[in-house]
Length: 252
Length: 312
Ligand SMILES: Nc1ncnc2c1ncn2[C@@H]1O[C@H](COP(=O)(O)OP(=O)(O)OP(=O)(O)O)[C@@H](O)[C@H]1O
Ligand SMILES: [Mg+2]
View 1 (cartoon, helix red, strand yellow):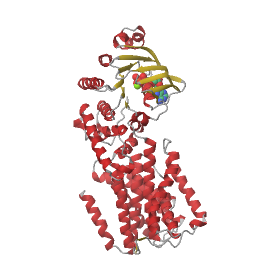
View 2: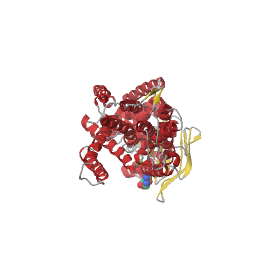
View 3: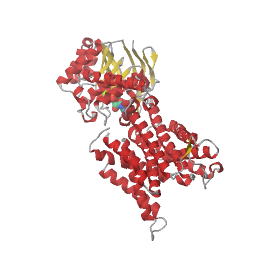
View 4: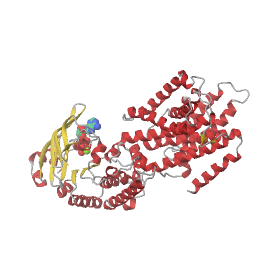
């Protein structure tokens, strides 16, 4: 298992957003997390990514506890996040945004940058190459020099995907990456996620589009009111009565 | 690039044509620019504000002054100035930069008030009268005695500050800083150690101010707590905002513009018939007005407005 959550719990103002969640994700798996609005999906991601601290429970990544680590340490360990909201760096170009994503695997500090050490130059070149490659994979080459904040919201999410890729993550958390995208862009993103799975990157994917999910996911976890109400292959989930009642029933 | 070279050439040639009083203004503007570039970096790139930047200027000045008064080679005193100022910033910043929000503004303001009262009451620092008899700066037997030499020293100091800041902005940590100023959450999730970076840029801004303060001590030859009022810290903030946050040229342009303006105001306020409180009332009023004007008509400051569009 690359990721293990045990008894995770988090409440806001006395109301549980995530309640006693257990989650085991295998190496290389693409796990979909679905559930109605307010089910606790984003909160669960934030507990894994480190944006929120759990009230109780543990998160183990690659065999070590990470639930006390600050988010940048989790990023350095190989966890990347694509947030549900627009979280690009405005005032920076798309390319620069993606280059920030390389922070996780690189080292140049203030001193080396100020002194322009050769080490810095070498790494700077490497970061730029990596960022261009990530941009190309996400289909954003033509936008490289635009201000990221000026892109349509859907494209901003794709910038986040490219930024996450630039850090060469081993675990990628994607919170509704396809929302706001048109059909063609959606298909392209699905292809990219498929490719990434082929490369062995483990992914957690929140997505409301059931077709998108079933096409990609190995397994599906269903959350409702902060709790896991079902887990299984896409086929099993579609046949599950509780799921149909809690979630699919409402949309179908 | 052409603008940069032109600016370098003009500012290098300028001191030759200035009289004594004008040279003094040149030196003060250059020192203010060194401080403001650092503050602009802190405000524009890291999204934090310091209301006590003059205290690092003072710490640098007193470090250089005290060391050389007690027999340390002046050059070593000058080199120690940014180091000691940075160390103070690291201690103050370590406590408050972890917290979200503008705690740094309050902490730095408090720090300056404490520093001023400590300096005024400490006999080792000359008390309220100040530190007298600071020797001239000398490098390897060559003594800088003329004002014009200090003008070139300031020029060199500002050049160092600008090169350092420029190198930082266009680098991995520089991108991390700009990123965390717009989205702390996303920056941290990308691996940016938000607290450490903030502390580092705050420390660097203090080092710039400390270096400027060190030069100031040798230039003037004496120091008193009265040379570093809170108003001076506010002045640096106004300079940074007026010039344009987050651009290096903005720090310089803002500093020069305000120093010239203050000079003009002083002439006006001390002209015959003006009440004795005119200088301070005028300067506060003008800072207030300037901030309002800039916020209303040039919200990004002079330099970005001149460039016409956003460039980072
Ligand atoms: N920062 C917060 N402060 C207060 N309540 C919050 C906070 N974040 C989430 N909640 C609450 O926790 C619950 C779960 O929210 P969460 O965002 O995790 O749901 P979600 O499954 O991601 O929903 P959606 O599909 O709408 O994105 C909701 O009731 C929400 O109102
Ligand atoms: Mg959500």
